[in-house]
Figure: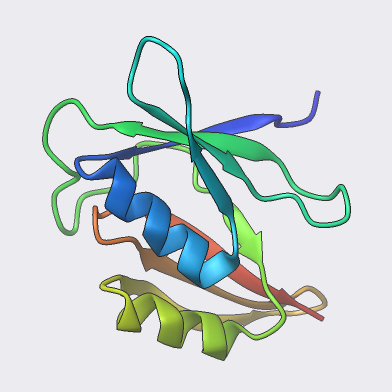
Length: 123
């Protein structure tokens, strides 16, 4: 079965939504349901999955702690450009870009809330 939804936990979901919208062009819409939940549309030409941003309960992951979650990876045309945008908008680089032979260039970054995500520039 394919992955069909993801969730990003954030202490400041509105700001986190803007971070991803500005870097990747995702559409963020506040859900009108009974809880704080921002719907995320990542689809381009029917490719991609949709997800959400919700308010984090508890502290952000500690710096240097192992990842205890799924890490989603976003495909981009220019990895260097995306990494510059991450840094310019308050994110950081968790793992510098590396070549994945036969696949492309991959890096891992953190949003301002400390969530790790992958960025790949496919060959």
